[in-house]
Image (cartoon, rainbow, N blue to C red; front, top):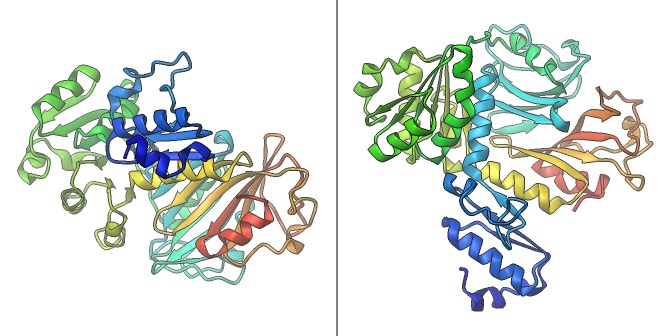
Length: 398
C-alpha cells in the first residue's frame, strides 16, 4: 500500500532499500516517492506501462521524482524474447561483461555428436560447459560426467563461441525471414519495438491482437509491421494469416493457458521456433513436454534486476536461469576478495558452483586449474541454489 501510515509502520524512514512491486504502476511510484520523503536511501519501483517510458519522466535525468530505479518486467522480458528470436538455436540466452561474454543453453538431440560423450571429450577450449539440467535437477559437470540425450546444457564463453556449440548439440541453424508476435500487450508492444529494425533487412513482421484500440496504437507506432486484428487463440485466424509459415513466433498474450495452448498448436503446425511468455512459474515444468523452444517469465527477469541491486556494487550483472533455479553472476574481484591470487584447483569452489570465464583487460579467459583470479577481473560464476551462500562468501557478496 502507498498509505503513509502503512509505510511508517513498515519503518521505511530508516530503510536502506525500498522495493515497490505491486500490480499497479501508480501505487509503486507513489510508495517510492513517499518512502524517499520519509528518508529511505534507495527506492525501486516496478513500472510496466509503455506510456511511462516518457510521459512521467519529470526529472532532468529522465527518472521519476523519488524513484531511484525503475524495473520494467515487460520491457526486460521483451528484450529477452528478442535475443532468443535473433539467436534461434538457444533456449536461454544472455550477454555479460558488456557483451564480451555469452551464456547460451541447448537441448541435446539424440543424434548429437555430444550425446553419451564425457565432458572431457568435448574439447571446447574456448568455452566452459557450466551446468546440465537433467530431469529437473541441476548437475555441475566434471570431466567424467556423461551428457545424455534430452539434457539441457549451459555453455559460457567469449561472444560468438558458445553459438558454435549448437551444432554439437544437434540444433540446426535457423534462417530468420518472418516473425509473428501473438498478442499486443505491453510485452508485445516492447517486442514490436525491439524487432521492427529487422524489417529493414527484409524480415517480415506480423502482430496479432484482438483489441482494436491496441491494434491502432501498434499500427501507428510501428508502420513497418503488419498488424492483424483477430483473436490469436482462434486457430482459424492464425491459419488464415499463415502464421504457421513464420520462422519464429512469440506468444505474449495476457493469459498463460491460452499462450501455452497457442504455442503448442503452432509448434505442432511446424513453426521452427516458438517462444512463450508466462506470468506464473508453475507452468514451466509443462513446457518441455509441449516441445516449446523457450519460455520467458517477466517476474524472473525483474527479480534478476532487483537482486543485482541488492547484492551490491561488486555484482556487475546477474542472470537467473529459470528452470535450473540457478544464477549466473558477473562479479568484480577486489583487492580484498578471498578468491584472489589462489589457483582455482585450491580455491575450494563449492560443489554446486563453477567459474565459467574471466574477463581481464578486455580479454576473455577460459580458466583451468592453475588459473588465478586477480583484482580487477570480471568473474563469471554459475551457482546452483544449494551453493549460493558459500559462493557469496568466496567473493564477499551480500
